[in-house]
Amino acid sequence: MSYSIGIDYGTASGRVILVNTSDGKIVSSYEETYQHGTIAEELGGETLPHNYFLQHAGDYHHVLENGVKHVLEESQINKDEVVGIGVDFTSCTVVFLDENFRPLHMNEDLSHHPHAYVKLWKHHGAQDEATQMVEANEKANQNWLDYYGHSVNSEWMIPKILEVKHKAPELLERAHYIMEAGDYMTSLLVNQNIRSNCGIGFKGFYDEVNGFNYDFFETVDPELPQIVKDKCEAPVIQIGDSAGSLSEYYQNLWGLSSNVQISPYMIDAHSGVLGAGAIEKGEFTPVIGTSTCHLMLDPKQEPIPSITGSVKDAIIPGLYAYEAGQAAVGDLFSYSERMAPQHIVEEAAKQDKSVLEYLETLASQIPVEDQHVVVLDWHNGNRSILSDSHLTGSVFGLTLQTPFEMVHRAYLESTAFGTKMIMKQFEDNDIPVHTVYASGGIPKKSQLLVDIYANVLNKKVVVLESSNATALGAAMLGANVGGAYDTLRETVQHMKQPVYYEKQPDPEKVKHYEKLFDKYQKLHDLLGREHPELSYIHETE
Image (cartoon, rainbow, N blue to C red; front, side):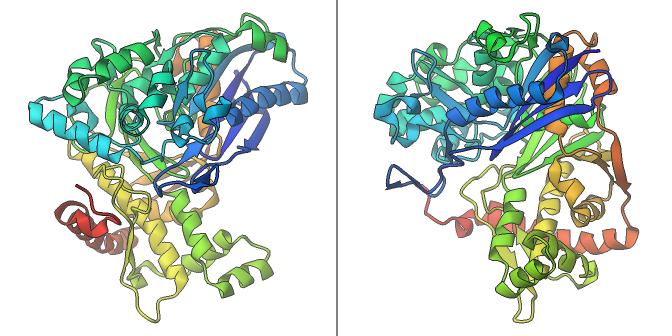
């Protein structure tokens, strides 16, 4: 008998699970909302720009220390049977640290400085820097972005470093280390400064053969290569290899053995692919949460336009992992919930339902052939396939008689349409899809959403039994490096989640959704490609 621990850092909360490595069964779990939340409106009495999303690293420490302690105490297992720990983290979330490996914002004199804080993945203050990088690539006439979808996303690490260089150079001087938050947490666990090939491969322009792309960095900004060398370089650990043994501090804190092995961190959505068991070619995994990350695995690497990257060995050794994404999905549904009119809010309360649950009930009663509202789902910008965080959402087809539940249904449908745009990019570039694995907590809660996705995508959709796919994937990483199985693939096969149900497309609904998708695609191209300025709140240079 052996156990592993998975630590899952999401956008608003963190989870810790203790798992039996023989079958993936969750023995104990812990969840905690971040105490400081997401810092998005004001800091220290000063108003923040609308696209700033910051966090406090102390919240991550609290989840780690209290969560592991909780699952060990609640389960009452023999602690010597814990073999490994894995971490996943929402990405690209960037931490700036001082010479003592302490986040800059934890220094009292920087507690009110926004650029000293953790830059959450959906912090979009670096769009100008992302555009600068794309223009530098085009001007140099190079192929540096071929395997990044010919684009640079403002959520990635290098644009965020440039943002600090341009807006707070004095803070960049004080930063001795810059890394993804997932690397920060695993570095703490092993008491060494390390990096995961998954994180920097997708978000840092790093590959296992050439390392960081310093030629590209030099073209963008002559000072950038030295910044990256001084502050970002560290030993890179491959997924499937151990990052080291648990440090003495955490051994003493939790009463665990020095034999406990730590996996390099994995991006949360990528970890969800492991938890879902979707590790074969042709399996398309949208990990649906506050945002959606779309993952595929394939033995070949193709330069697919408008996706957000492909990295070898980033999920399963020996395969290329492909990633694309939507910046607002669960967040979009929550926005719709907040916009609900009072009569819906009151009726939901009468029926002892959440507003979102009641909206789903109402929206489910609308036949797809009656739907005439189309939404562009860019309320937090567009990650794929336009890679433009300045874009904003739009609603089309409203009349004085349009009920709000029809608009809510259109929000759900818009995320399926956005997913179809992404899936088409894969299929049009020789990466075929035969099955969709809907991972994350939302698909299990929303049968309407799963029905919409099956019919919009015209694919079988598989929904998994548990909503803890990302945390389970992290636990699989821990089990693998802890020696529970010989390979990560074998680990996944033994520990993956069971299937909850499968949804096949309905030919009649598919026909109706093809017409709605045609409208969506035309609006997408008009306002995203031909006239994006019409979707911008502020003028851009």
